[in-house]
Image (cartoon, rainbow, N blue to C red; front, top):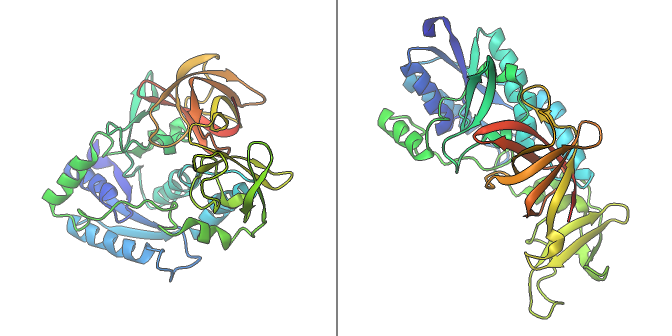
Length: 363
C-alpha cells in the first residue's frame, strides 16, 4: 500500500515539516516536498523570510534525498486570506489568519496543486492527528498539549482530513527536535516561526498601518469619561494592555488599563482598569455560521468543551443553536477577553468537533 502512495509534504523549511518528511520516508513511502511562497508584497523586507526558508527546504530535501517543488500562491493568499484579514480589522474585529490560511490555501489550493503533480495525499508538520471512526475521518488533538494545533484546523472537512497526514501529531516537540538531531537534519535547531501566517515575524502594528488608515478617536473609561486617545480601532484588540499610552491612574492604585470593547458607531475605544474587571469577562457568546467537521451539527443542546484562543485549556460549556447557522455557547465559568472575529473551537474529549467565529459576548 505504501509503495502505491505518493505523499507531498508541505515543507516550510522548519523542523516540524522536515521531520514529517523524514518519518514518511522511513516508512517506505514515496515522498516529495512542495514549498509554498504565499507573500511577495515586500520580498526584500527584513521580516520576510521566504528566500531563506526556501534555501532551508532545499538543504532538507538534499539531506533526505527527496525531490523539491516550489509554487507561488501569493495571489491566492492575497485574494482568499489577506483581503478578508484586512476587512475584518477595518470592521473592528480580530481575525485569525492561520485558520483562514489552512482552510483557503494549505488544504485547498496547495492540495489541488499537489494532486496535479501526482500526489495521492498531502502531509504537514501540524501537531494534530486523524482517526477513522464509523467509516469517517475525524480530527484529534496532537498529543503534545503545549503544541496541539487542532485549533487552527477546525474548519477542515472530512474529505480534506481523509487526504491529509500529520506525521508528528503523535510526538512531543522535544521528540521532534531529538529525531531531527539524530538524523542530522540541517534545520534541527531552527527556531519556530511565531509571526503572521506566511508573512513573517514583524511589528504587527506597523505592518497593519500600511493597509489600514488611522482613524483617531477617544479612549473612554467605564463611565464614558475620556482617559486618552487612540489611533484607530483596528489597531487594538479585546484584552490588550500594552500600547494604550494612558498608563495606570484614575482608580487610585495605578492598575493598568485593558481594552474591553469597541464602540464602532462613535469610534470610541472602551477600557477598564485591572485584569479581573467584570467587563473583561463573559459567560456566554454567540457566533457566526458554525463549521461542523462531521458535516452536520450534532443534536443540540450539546455539552462539550471549548477554547476561545490557542493553547487555552478546554473549558466546559453548553452549545445551543443561535440565529441562522450560528451557535450560542454558555460556559460553566466566565471567560476572559473574548474577541469578536477570533475562533471558538469545540471539543469532545480528544476530538475536535469544529468551531465558529465569535460575534458577541455577554456577561
